[in-house]
Image 1 (spheres, one colour):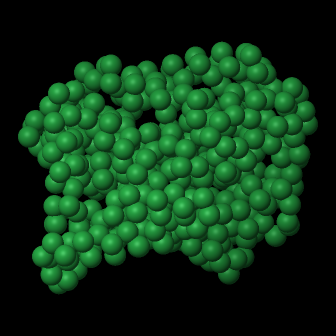
Image 2: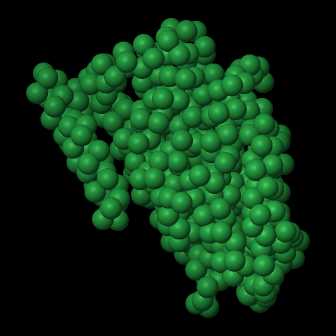
Image 3: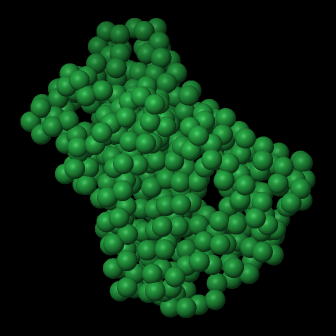
Length: 434
């Protein structure tokens, strides 16, 4: 069944079919196997429901992310960041600048896909026109996009890990930032060397002239992003800070950008869309509640898998293998190996995170390492590793958005350096209380 499930996931990626179909098909198959092993449909239903309940906390965050990404586009926050970010680019150090800008934007947006779909697309337009190696540019952008996907308070994966491990989000972020310094600095050095070898050939970008024509770029349009940063620094609940940012963005969209009420409501539900068609519209469109529907369903179904596997013990043999690995190599080494297998098998980051957590949770309990250590080890392994698997949508979707292929993987330095540096330098003081 595992082989059939894996094959169906790969087939869906090859045929560009939604992962929901193989996930549902696999779930039915595993339920039938559990039924043959003596579990009643009633008990199995309870397991599925119990697992799905884990996703409700994260899905609430998804709803806010969908709304905020649409509102930030409509009020001019994202266009402002893209415009000034590109204007500040250094041609000699284009690749390094692209990485740092992607880190900043992904930390503000909390989503790798959103970063790649806005700033990343704009940077790739510059890279192509400026004769920069496309794979290197894509590697720097995607690596930077996962900086925020890992440690932003608005990140769905960070909130998912916090929910699974029953830990506080801001304490996790504090622990993650400690282990981000070394890989970030090493990545900057690597991209500086690559930038020197592959400079941007100066060319006029139409983006810099198109954005001011479509949006008012008054400094106030950056307020929604500033509020997120200030409230994150004050450790205010992320749902409240996102709600305040949405309200502020909506007010700016109505008064500064002169967006109509009905249009704004439409954008929140279906995603932002510029009235004028063209390349700028393709870069800036997106967001909205509908954009989060599929990922919410994937998380809910993946949570159902988690409940089913926990209740039936279908993964018991694999858990024993993981425990033996961890006993010989150490807890983090075991987590790292498990995350590679889970990311390769599941083809999506969410299920990979849940499988790795489920397979390793007992190991950390037996070693008395605590939930905060487990949360940090998950963030430093499976969150990064998933984007390095060529057929996993964590890396395949951003690569497709940038019109490149798996050639970006060798140049996504930060994705390698986070697990490697943590593996060799694990002596980190883990914060478990405020």
